[in-house]
View 1 (cartoon, rainbow, N blue to C red):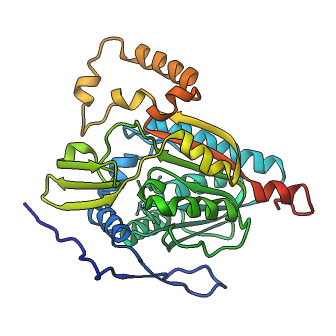
View 2 (cartoon, protein in one colour):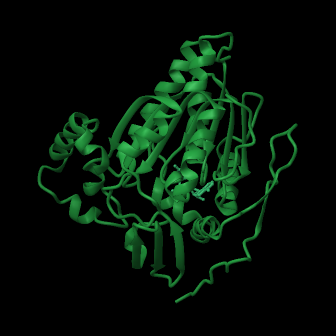
View 3 (cartoon, rainbow, N blue to C red):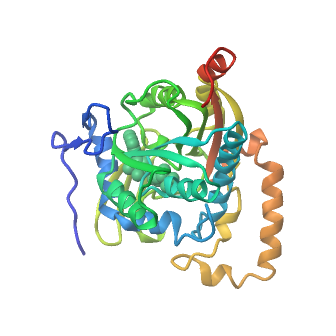
Length: 345
Ligand SMILES: C[S@@+](CC[C@H](N)C(=O)[O-])C[C@H]1O[C@@H](n2cnc3c(N)ncnc32)[C@H](O)[C@@H]1O
């Protein structure tokens, strides 16, 4: 068994923004709170295992073969629809921000789609976990690198701090899968304000819902030997089977609360539960694939569950019961500008 020590209070490493956007001053950020640093440390300790757990091997465009493939396809549909709306409006170079990008999964998927539909793209991903950003850079180089039409950069930044971009700088701002749950509760309203401020068309965010199934965030629960989530304080304590210990922030929110928080800054274009039933019976070789694959009539049942989800996912009583709540928001500042003299291009 390998015991890994956690960073102690007061020893939070400075996070240097080594990859600042060209033409902007390099921002030197220091992680202010130990919880944020501990969360970054947890993702960095598991390294590639996080992406393997969350994404599985990439399959079709925008999809994965992980237990979250169904959730991914819902999130991807929202993203692709938004990109297509922008193309219809004549956007030829898409500006995208992915807040808490982790190993760069969504940036990679959007860049691949943009290439396929001949859309130039300027994509920026940021995260507090340096190790995840290194993985994102490696993956991007391996997938395509950058070119005149595809510009991608990954930066270190803490979402709890103001964002270093001007109002409406990006067409689409993504913030998917637990990033916002990792913030202190008190930091959430300002962070949402910042996401909406720098977006000129849509913010697309998914957060763990208040009644969502248990998650260890960094790896599947099958790798966890001890689990304690204090829902009051938002502290998640894990001991993995390799002996490593992790303490993360995990605050859960009701859809009602998210509606109020986003509603203060944006017009909600969609609010739905993501994955009410399907991941429960997903085929995952590290998990219950051998049991689930033997279920009689499994494919038919999955089809029925998908239909049931379509019917229920926007019903107020069901919103909190998926793995995540998906929010698609149109920032209010943008609505004001669009009716004035500003345009998207
Ligand atoms: C579950 S992963 C999701 C990664 C990515 N958004 C995706 O959908 O694949 C959560 C990510 O949030 C990042 N994160 C947590 N707190 C953050 C913060 N305060 N600022 C920026 N990133 C943060 C973590 O380092 C981790 O990479």
